[in-house]
Image 1: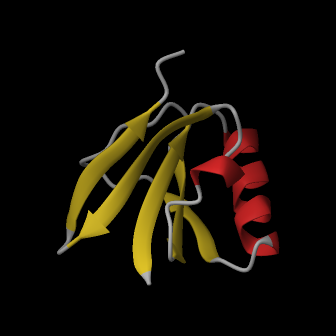
Image 2: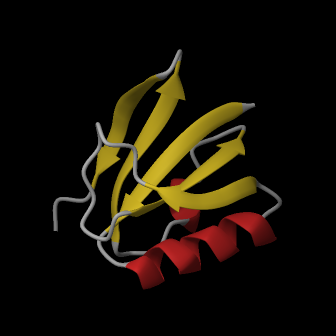
Length: 80
């Protein structure tokens, strides 16, 4: 199982993504964004899954990171 962090522009977007990930069977939790990452709303979703589940994230997602050995690796960033 891989671990990921998704950041968001709005708290609502984080909540919607959290719910979608849980409904898809992913272990997910909402938490404050780690200090080393930036986020517009200050809330992220940390989740475990086989894949990055990018398609489940709300359209207002800011970025997606893989958690590897305590470091955050940027996988995707919303350019809009």
